[in-house]
Image 1 (cartoon, helix red, strand yellow):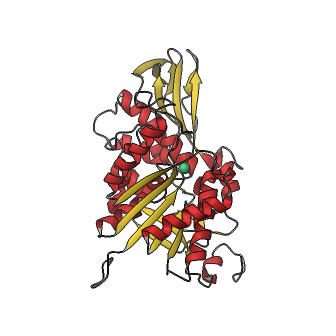
Image 2 (cartoon, rainbow, N blue to C red; image 1 turned 60 degrees about the vertical axis):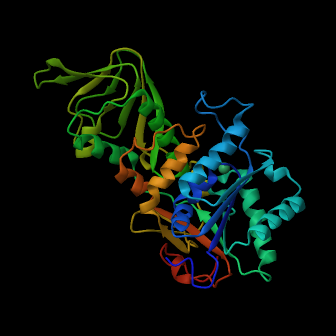
Image 3 (cartoon, helix red, strand yellow; image 1 turned 90 degrees about the vertical axis):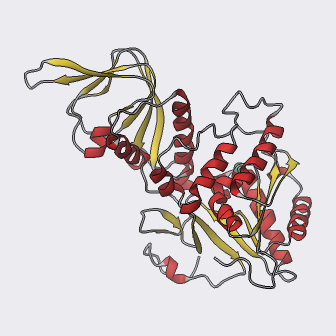
Length: 389
Ligand SMILES: [Zn+2]
């Protein structure tokens, strides 16, 4: 990757987003990759993220959250190797209510001042559908269109594929292969809960993840049934009971918080080889394949009309023009995610590297400027006639 041709200044890349953490979640690997190759990379967040959830009460209260998140953006920027990070003070959750002209003027000024070669922002889908994201993306896109005769900016919209990967299966394979029994710490319990639900909600994984409650004495699993779910115990304890052919039941094991249940059936595809019964009231983080559970969730509505399926099984918008291999920068992305501690209270070393690389190893973009002829070959994969949108 040549970013610094002789006689020229380094490539300049600007990301404009709505909230501190958007830069990492949407394009963190790409920003880190270009920064490490010598590009000057700046990120501007139009809000300080004051409406975000506070997932670690030790790091912020509602009244300190804006200041905390602005610092978290700086810390994440350091992990990604960014040249510059900046938060503006627009109201979190209120970007779509701002006067469009003044937002456009402000965004134009940011772009003009940084003189970027490349701008990255949200597309009309807002990545996750957040109205702030849609508003920022529209303003930045309009600004770049207006500036394009004066300066040759390449504009990209971030795109989130719909992953076909099941965390359920990857975690089961991981746990089964461990030589010692897995016992997650309290920190791991919290981190896995946040990490798995957030990534599944965004579409990085195809799981349906739920927190389930099992009153004392109830079955989580019945011996002989098909294995569809994997459980991670959040609280309470369970007994593993094996039933003989003649109906005798004996206790073979016990498990408690921080332990996985049912990974063997998921990893082998064989029916359950034991009963699992709640000894006291049990809560579990339950992983199921989403397609076997429900259709028509919010991701289906957010999915673009024209999609194509990659060899990995991921479904992407047919207009995706640019896939950046960031597998060597997944560590940067995870450390930057963890730097947004109020949002992602995770220890970056907790999760298996292979799973992280599979989830985050490629970032996808749609090139918007310079305008290109739509590559009709992209439209043929899903059976529709090529040639139009
Ligand atoms: Zn956001």
